[in-house]
Amino acid sequence: MHYSPIKKLSLVAILSVSFSSFVYSADIARTLRTNADPKTEPENFFEIGLGAGVGMGSSLTDEDGKGAGLSVNLSGSYNWNGFFIDVFNEASEDVVIGYNAYNHNNWSFDIVLGATGNGITNDTDDRFDGLNKREGSFYLGGRATGYYGKNIIQLSLKHDVSGRSQATIASALIGRNWQYQNWNFHGLVGLSLADKKLEDYFLGVSEEEANRTNFAAYDGKASVHFNSSVGATYLISESWEFRATAYAGSDFGRNDSPLFSKKRDFYTGIGASITYKF
Image 1 (tube, rainbow, N blue to C red):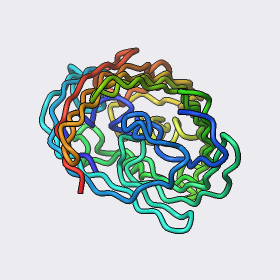
Image 2: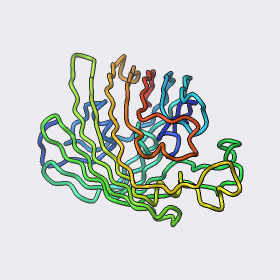
Image 3: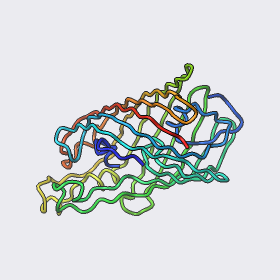
């Protein structure tokens, strides 16, 4: 879980080694940050941290699209006989439940179930009075992770099984890390593709809704989004870590919706935290 005023910005508000004979899929951001060995089984852990950050991008609720504040970060992972549940873990989904179905050479495959945010209601902003409620959806699909040298590749394809948006989402990520004494640096870039159904469900405005509100009618469309981040982790002790991350990405297409109070083609931000792992 991650509690922060910055999370309402942009896409975040709506909705983130060596070759071996045995690797395990996991949250790629954490794998890079911890310099985890792909030959070892995923660890069970729970951690809590205090962070601060600033961000700027498109916003549904903020007229200038800027945010700053403190956050309390709770994350963890539990693994048992191939089944796992990951909470937050710096990923785009707060909770992911899955099963590690395949491990061979430098590839691993997971069956995963995740959720997309809390949706949009009139509690999100008074401007949304008169709109139909947009509820978060549950997505089921597959996630493949490959290890090539120091590079990690992750591909995923998921479909809405809640029956709300009935959408399909695809993503591709590639990351790498560099270790220097107690410092671990990493970089991550990716593309995500959302079909028309997802954008139309969350950000579209029907003719009926337009008649009840001040929003113009709008049909959502398929969109492609770029995202990237660079980060550094410093191991203070066996239990304490310092983390810093800068991120940037695009909002092309998605911010055409009249629901946005502030529209920007790109989002950027930076944050830092102190974390304790149990």
